[in-house]
Length: 226
Length: 297
Image 1 (cartoon, each protein chain N blue to C red):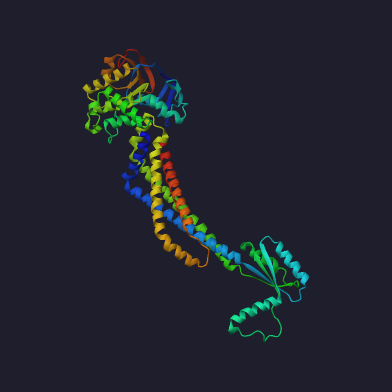
Image 2: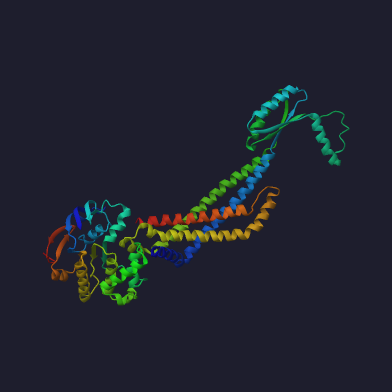
C-alpha cells in the first residue's frame, strides 16, 4: 500500500529531514512511527499526501508514484489518504455534522450521498448525538473524533495520524486509540506518528523508529524503545 | 449541486464579510469604468469632428493668366493621379468673377465691382483631398512648381485639421495612460480584496486541499467574488452614466454643434455591454491572479 524507496528530504539549508528511507507498509497494516521531535515523522506524513516532495527517491502510495503525480491528480491522491492532526484542524464556524460533510461537498458528492456518508461516519465515531454542536462546545476527544470522522467519510485506503492523542488526557487517549483500532479492523491501513510510549508498548504493533531522519529500527510487535 | 451551492455561498460570504474592502474595490472599478466611458464618448465626438473637417479640406492652386489651357489640363491630370486627392475642379476667371459677384450682391458694404473694368481674378484649380493628413505634402509638391509659368500661388488651410488631429492624438494617448493607471489601481485593489478574503478563509482552504478538493474548486468562490466586484462596479458606473447621459448628450451636441455625433441608444447599449463585460473580466482576472499566487505558497 505504501512504499518508500531510498527517500531523502533535504532542506535548502542543508539539513536532512529524512535520509535514505526504505519502508514498505502492506494494505491493512497498523504501524506506529516513533521518534523524538524533529526525527522526521511529520515530514514522512507530508510526503504521503504530497504536501512535500522528496529531494530524491520514490514514494509509492496505492501503486502510484506520488513524486511523478501531475499537480492536477494530487486531489485524487488525497482522497485516498485521510489525515488527522494533533490540533484537529476543525472549522470553528461549522457544526460537527458540517465539518464532516464539508469534505464530501468540496470533493463533489451529491446531496444524498453527503447526508448518508456523513451519518455513517458520525455513527462510526459515536458522535451522532453531538452532530449539531460546534467544536468549541466539545471536549478534546470529541473534537478528535470529529476530525477522524471527516477523514473516514472519504472512505480512505490509508489513514495517517500525526500525534492524534498529543493534546488529550490518558482516558480520552485510549478512546481515540480504540477507535483507530476499529478503523484498522475495517480494513484501513493505519500509520500513527506518536510520542506516547504507553500506547505503543501496550498494543505491541509494528514500530518504525526514526532518529535524525533515518530509520533506526523497524520491528514487528515492537516496543516504544528498543 | 451541493458544490455549486458551496461556491455561491462562499463567494457571497467573502464579499459581504469584508464590506470596507468590497466597497472600496467596487467603487474603484466603478470610477475606472466611468472614466473609460467618458473617454469613449469624447473620442467618438472628436472623431466625428475630424471626419467632418477632413471632408472639407481643400487646396486652391491659383493659375497664371499666361498659362496655356493644355498646361492647365496637364497639371490637373497630374494632380488627379495622386491617391490623396479626391477630385480637382477647374475654376475659370469668369467663374471666379461670377462667384465674387454673388458674394458682393449679398454684402452691400463691399460696393459694386462693376467699377473695375477688367477681371483681376485668376483662374484656379480647387483640389478636394481624400485624406487630410496628406494636405501638407500635396501643397508642398505644388508649391515647388510656383514660377514655372502655370502656378502662381498655393493656398491651403490645413491648420484646423492639424490642430484637431493633434488634440485627438493627445487625448487618446493621455486617456490611454490614465486608463492604464486606473486599470492597474483597480486590479491592485481587487487583488488585495481577494487576498484578504483568501486569508480569512485560509483554514477552510487548508482543509479543502487536505481532503482532496481540486484547485479549481478552491479558487472558484474567489473568482466569483471578483466577478461580483466587477458586476457591482459596472452597476454603479452604469447608473451614473444613465443619470448623466441626458444632460451630457445635450451638452456634447451643443459643444460639437453641427457634428453628426450620435449618442443615441445604440452607443449607450454598446457602452453598457462593454463596461459590464470589461468589469466582469477584470474582476475575474484580478481574483484569479490573487488566488493563484496564494495557493502556490
